[in-house]
Length: 240
Ligand SMILES: [Zn+2]
Image (tube, rainbow, N blue to C red):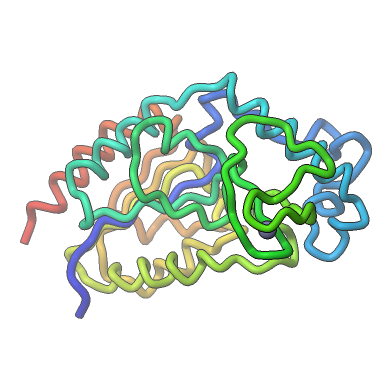
């Protein structure tokens, strides 16, 4: 049996209160394109300029938003429990990092980084727009993709995520799920066979999550639930 750990898994709901705008407008489209068409592993090179325009907007927008209390408390929990706590997010924003959270596993990539398709180098771009033709600082090629997992693309960090989930077989471990519908990564199914303590926080009931398996359930904003979650973790962690 693996040792006990705290695994905190989050999605868009934790960043919503920071004002991170959803990239779909009312029609589910971005500038008349479907998101599936823009963020698509098989067609992104064909749509190269649109893809970069789309991600430039997302990236620049990050400069104007701030982490919220939920990011901050998660950062404090990580600081307190160190390697006993694993923070995983589906979010591509850098709100956790800005809140001071270390070693966050971004399973769907990071907006502030670019990926050179020629030499596989991943480099920081911050909140800047990527200019078409800009070169990789390592190899000088300009075949550059946002460091974000696209539909149909590989998600290498899923390996780290599934390794982290293995700790949840330990009944003294704690799984915390915040702000995710659970449809992209099926967190509910992943937790079903785990014996750990389980905490769920979403704004609303999700059809993709069986909340009966959770020990604590909070249907409210992440910022209003997070201190209760912090106390729950403390309580569960002490019980031997
Ligand atoms: Zn390169």
